[in-house]
Image 1 (cartoon, rainbow, N blue to C red):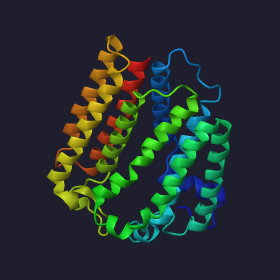
Image 2: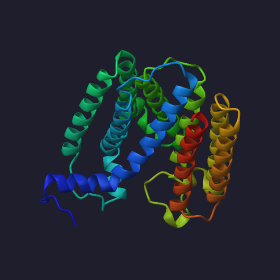
Image 3: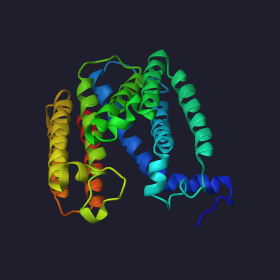
Length: 295
């Protein structure tokens, strides 16, 4: 078991494994960035993708990490009580240490975004400023804490800002059809956020909000299904806007299969780990579908 006396690299490695698994997030970012790049390229086939576009994926990966680090500061008191076994709660890593890591991560994002050009830099800055507002919960954290769905809706725009940043990093011309993709990813991410906070009664954690406590296990399942359906509709519009033929049909099939699996997987009686898993798989399949349609 790690302690505060272990070397720094081991403590940070243990923290990342616990709260930000590098392999999982690398796969997520690769599928997200890859599908966005292919879709942007399909919208502007005559355009030239920027030579450094791939660095945008590094910024996205680091942005997810800096969001996690900000959340650790924002939720420290609540998480310490609810999850006493976590490394941060036990003092193996400290808020001060994570704060220094946050400064390093954001600085790296800034430098990389700057190398991607003015448009990417401005998009990154908008995303970063929004995360700062999220960190302080827009000044209405006490009210938001009692309205879990509104909380998710107010924080969800950070996903759209990241998606727009990815497009800016490609250097390709803007096309309004890209808004379909922005919508699909935003709503799919909202479904993931809901899915990871739906629990069976014996899984509820005192002091930790969940959709199942706010809306009931049945009500939260129907809420998630509705968000999943909206994400599929936006996904279909995304795919059909560029690929109406064979590959569009394959992409459509992937989205429909993903929806069916997710809808079945969120039924009351299924454990929280399964609901979170199917919500995650659905989001990843959405990226795959767009990638296939844009190939």
